[in-house]
Length: 121
Image 1 (cartoon, rainbow, N blue to C red):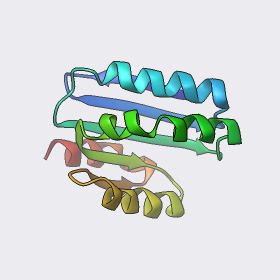
Image 2: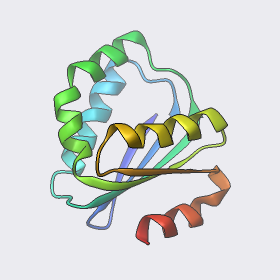
Image 3: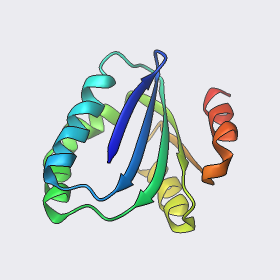
Image 4: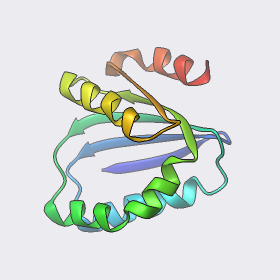
């Protein structure tokens, strides 16, 4: 499951649980783009409930949409990632180096309030 919720005028809340196939990836990327249309200097609260690697078809869809995803990411300056997996926290924070102007900080899932406070600081 990939759920995107617009929270206020400049924050997206994203919840990921389970494995995405190609249809799920198409829907998720379309939803990200449409819900972020009017966002500037935005923030993302990304909750990784249960991570499973996406299917090869889903990865292909994601790569085919890289230009629109780079445009999407430029709308945001902060992202907080909630996860119980240490390796996901490390990879998430490393991704911050790949997107200039985007600061990514990872938190344990039980630190949701701290993550929200960091996004707003």
